[in-house]
Length: 122
Image (tube, rainbow, N blue to C red; front, side, top):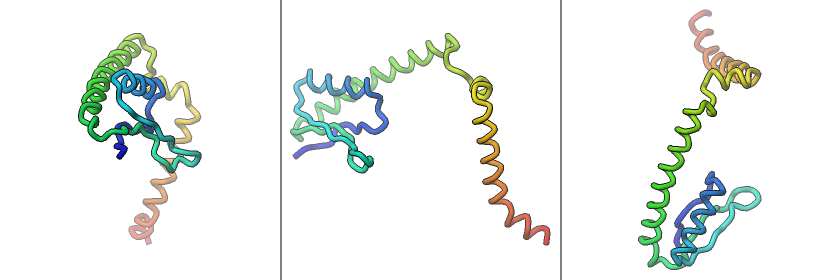
């Protein structure tokens, strides 16, 4: 019976391709399912043989630990070079979006506080 090994929801394509290649290189029999048009299915990689699950998980855990270190180093390099905008830089890049978010927050807060305002000030 097939066993779920790796969900592909919100996984970057390069990571999914690396996982496919890794499983193929290590000789694991697997297949992949897609989420479908409406996203109701399970996008995942499944192992065909249940007996291979512990070994496949160990291989996958090792890969993900190595990838996490690489991605963290890449992020730190980008941040050190100033290529990742900070909070105020992102506000300056998208001022209309920031104002829209502030207005939406004010609207929601006013809807939440109107009942209390009316009870305190009859």
